[in-house]
Image 1 (cartoon, helix red, strand yellow):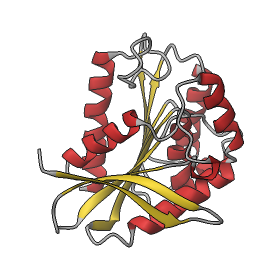
Image 2: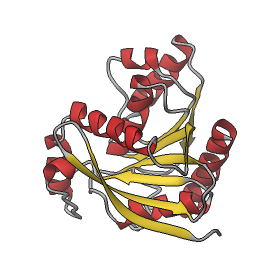
Image 3: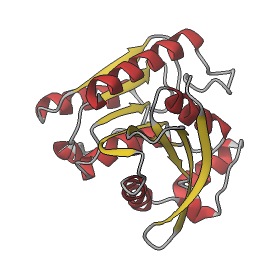
Image 4: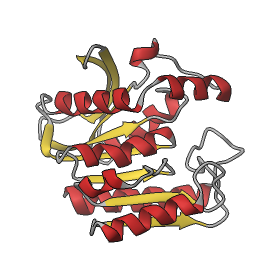
Amino acid sequence: MADIRETMVQFSGEGVALTAYVAAPVTKEQRPAMIIVQEWWGLNDHIKDIAKRFAGEGYVAIAPDLYSRLGHAVTTDSNEAGDLMNRLSQEDGLKDLRATLLYLKTVPEVDAARIGVTGFCMGGFYALMLPCLTGDIKAAVPFYGQVPNPDTPLQNLGCPVLYIYGEDDGWITKADVQRLATALKKYKKPGEVKTYPGATHAFFNDTRKEVYKPAEAKDAWARTLAFFKEHLA
């Protein structure tokens, strides 16, 4: 694995000073970049670890703090997490992700033509929506994120999508995921849904032993890397 540089950065958003965690290979060469969008818990060590994994694969990885507007909160309490997620308007979350994109384009080591996005739970929704608003995202892998209803934003989806889902998810329904698959076909968008039988919501989170599914998470990670390699090569 290449040497990895870890930094916290600050940049301007719309009416907010945003912070983000960046993990990147120590190199002067231009690299593809990855935006990692947090779960409702905030920008915690698990999300930073995923960024580090991407950096180890050669990406400049950035995990913006979507709770910058909310005092940079991080929690392990589900009630507080739900409150934080609800206090962040989806419009503001998407504005802050677009600001993250603009920041990435100023980083000398970033190849701005090769930027992907992934996200988990709350972040899965944003990872699906961001490429509906900008053509700067070239591939997206949302993990068990909310599917927009109605599905009209997906008409503007600008990149291939790999949507990852656990069949026993108690938050995102099978009907939601079927709606996504149908919308991708209806709007002629390149995308696929990968469903893991027996896996629940947040099965990728290895810090939550009550939901973590090691074999499924390992397979999902391999598929994620292969998908981004194909579309950001």
